[in-house]
Length: 272
Image (cartoon, rainbow, N blue to C red):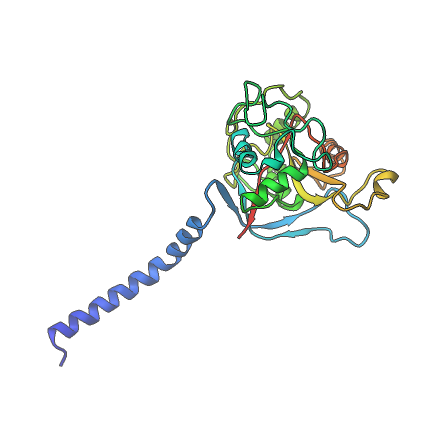
């Protein structure tokens, strides 16, 4: 016969076992959430279909789960990077890595000034500078597939291509001139994955080479890291009747790694 103390012990073990079984899945989800780096959103991964592909390339590209910055990198954040890495100051950077317009909107080497508010996205930065910042921040630039996968999401679902209003908003932004003084980050609504400003603020550098060339000269340029492309908007990117897709592709194809543009910034990614 079991004693009262032994019976109580067995009951307690049973209750704890039940609680552990019920709470374990939620605990795992909570652990996944807390492991997401601060200021980043966790994306589950999926499939990305490029606008153009070479013969023999897969129709769809698998995107593994990754983390992406919720906002683009700001002037203030890039200023911290420049302070810690003087060789990326405006007068110190090598011309190979940035053209003559690099950080031209800043008031000085380590002074933002009125044209570069602290919480506006950093622009006038080259691909090389964006890559260096990402490494300094223990992150990396997202691939085109990752960026486009994130940007294809609408506000309430993962497929913004099915949302007519979402596509109209992208079209309105692409057809409007960028202001000389960019607004702060975070002024728009977060998308399905909890990410902001993928549309409507700036274009953004990505890590990959532009392998879908559009001119003979570009096809002949096989130099390392000479032709990069910048992600922006992927709603209906595989639809050849979508003018916006070709407009985006044309901009990406025009870029080289040392270019700096007034409405071209970046955000960082990280493996999970």
